[in-house]
Image 1: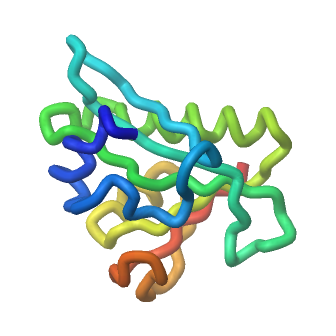
Image 2 (image 1 turned 45 degrees about the horizontal axis):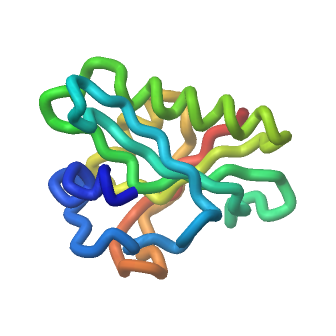
Length: 133
């Protein structure tokens, strides 16, 4: 995660690398590289979705795409990769807590979005986006 922190700081405003609810080896991280630079990144882990707590689910977080790569399909490729990993272990829901500026992207990719609320880790206003796999 350290190699992707610069991108996440720039896109998401992260002040510390551990500003997530999932720490250590529980999370996996995917990145798209271009000429040794991180173009896009997402982290993910098995974690129940509050909307469907009994359904096996994959939580994804810290998704960031460098501004010069936005609109080129990087975010969609990362979502597809996370969904593939979720399906491979029998998870049927994929979800995240998204900033308002990202909600339209996730909805265009097939997610449903909740009403805005304040999440409990960083105290940010977000909307939950949920994909049925």
